[in-house]
Amino acid sequence: MDLASLGNYLLTRINAGEVELWLRSLPLARSSCAKARNLMSVLFNHGIRHDICGRNPIRLVRQSAKRRKIPAILSVPDIQKLLPALPLRERTLVLLDVGTGLRMSELFALKWRDVNFRAREISVTRSIVFQVVGPCKTEASQKSIPLDSYLARTLREWRKHTKYRAPDDWVFASPASCGRRPYWAQSIMRNLIRPAAVELGITEHVGWHTFRHTYSSLLRATGADIKVMQELLRHASSRVTLDTYTQAVTLHKRRAQSDVIRLFRTSTPCGG
Image 1 (spheres, helix red, strand yellow):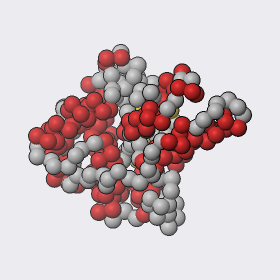
Image 2 (cartoon, rainbow, N blue to C red):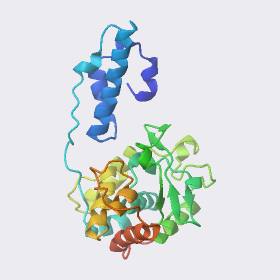
Image 3 (tube, rainbow, N blue to C red):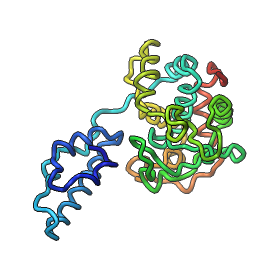
Image 4 (cartoon, one colour):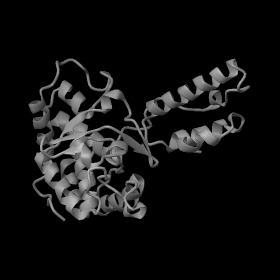
């Protein structure tokens, strides 16, 4: 069962076990999965009140809002080893992710029209999960982020290599679908990036969220204030990054991002 096909299910055919498997398959935090479960429960309760269905199987779904485990964080030497060891496509993906903190669903949902090279900004306007395009995780997520000049050069280099470079093309369009869909994120991670990390002796279990979490940690290490961090990471809740400062100035956001990228760019080739 997946979200796209859920509409084809009869309410009487949906069971707790399938919902649990679906929730576990989502590349989301446990708190987000718990919200999805709670919303489904509300819908079933609404159906019961209006005699549309006679039971609520979601009540039997086991779903904790607690984090499974603390996400891995890569060290600066690990990043410096990993980036030059990757082919251009994977290197661009990892560099963009560890240099912006984009969520996996946002990274692969980028189109070239979202990248403003002149203003040096990336507009985050959509997400993609299991090849289904939808809105961003939260309203706060749907914001522009700065594009460091080094990241911009790397993206320009990738654009020269890909066949799909029109404004409405996916930045990471898959030739297997003739550019109609982006690459499968987990396939690239499982088959290319993670094996490269293992071969280099990187002991942390690397996943897409590793890069976002690493970016967050490096922002802290370089002295970025909490408000700048919140805006760069596009957190909706002050519980994540304590919202105690006034609106961050764009220049401060650019400096904070560039401070992170300078940590690992010295040994990383820009081209293919």
